[in-house]
Amino acid sequence: MTHALHALAARPGSASPLRYLDIDTRDPAEYLAALDALRWAKLQKQIRYVWRNEDYYRRRFIEAGVTSPNDIRSLADFRQLPAFIDKARHRDSQDESLRRYGHPLGLHLTTAPENAIHLAATSGTTGTPTFYVFSRKDLEITYKVLGRMFAVMGLRPGDTTFHAFGLSLWLAGITYTQALEAYGARPVAVGAEGGVPKILRYIELTRPRFLFATPSMVNQLIERAPNEIGKPIGALGIDGVFCSGEPGASQPAFRQRVREHFGARVFDATGGAWHNGTITCDSADAHGMHYMAEDHCFRYDLVDPETRQPLEIRDGAVGEGIHTALEYEASPAFRNATGDILRLHVGECPGCGHFGVRMEIIGRADDMLAIKGVKVYPAAIQKVVHGFMPRLSGELRIRLDAPPPRVEPPLKLIVEAGENTAESEWAELGKALAQRIRELLSFRPKVSVLPFGSLPRSGAKTKLIEIAPPA
Ligand SMILES: [Zn+2]
Image (cartoon, rainbow, N blue to C red; front, side, top):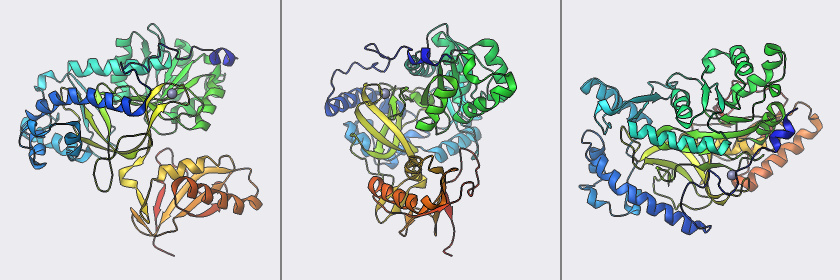
């Protein structure tokens, strides 16, 4: 097996691609202050730039009581502004520009339509797709940011990469393959559309060093390789797996599975939209994602999801990320309410030792629960449940009597015993789980343990919350 060789593969050293910023301090407060200075320098220009957009952004400023860009005198002033755009407003802006101007690039288009030379879109599973619009400059910065992420994986110009992400319009599709070419790599772009058998045959034929795929695709490749190509996936020599598009690739169990079956390192990443980019290092436990574009976007301008007030940015802060691309040219994110609830880590990464800011996405603003003033996200509960695997199966449901966010305690949490857990252990396991949640999340749920296989499986997007009237 090639496993031992991969374990010896080069790790990021002193010239780590994670060190792309010229900030030379290991003091968290000084580091954040240097970032703020960098942001404010770029924001002063960007505020004036988007102000010129009378159709959309100037209206938002005026609604917020800002009558001139000069009214915003500091980063603190900027952080007091409300969110200017979110998914729903983004769609409305596209619909209105289609009606008014015959293009869907949005009323918030801040450049001439002919400068918009690249389009990507969200999958549109919940309605009309939202487009990400790129000018030449936007694309160049995107390639730079994604290139930093590729470098973190140890990708080198000349390497073959295999693209098993969906290609059609998705950011991680065409935009990524173009970024890989700009980097000097050689992407084999079969895409998820090609289907698992074809993907496996093309991997065997092209011998890529890196695989780009969602965690569920990675699992399918592991399971189906022996039947489709007559050998385990680990025999194909893949050195690193780049995951995105779904949660899961930061979980220790998944990372372990990839190491065992592929003999490869695994990276969990987000990014591509509006100059955002984050990636984990390849440590066994993910320790959050490193921000790879602090100089091009302000992704974690955190606000309290209830009061919408800005929160202090510091190690351990939790809130909704408001995203502003600092120098985006086409249809920029500018105070974009992402809906992502982030937990920040500021300091040294326990995985790779790099000093900087990392984030975990711990939930969505719209699935927040409030239990007697304690804010809880289903994903945070899931993480604690996953810590009890394999004694528990990892499946769970949160059963509410009324729609969230208010929950009358105790919160009812349904979990499943692991496949090989004796029924005599269930009661003790339920107590231990309730206690662990009490310690980590500051509330005590009422836990019911069901037999293995009781809860329906419906893939990565399973809703963790069920709402039922009291029995
Ligand atoms: Zn790290």
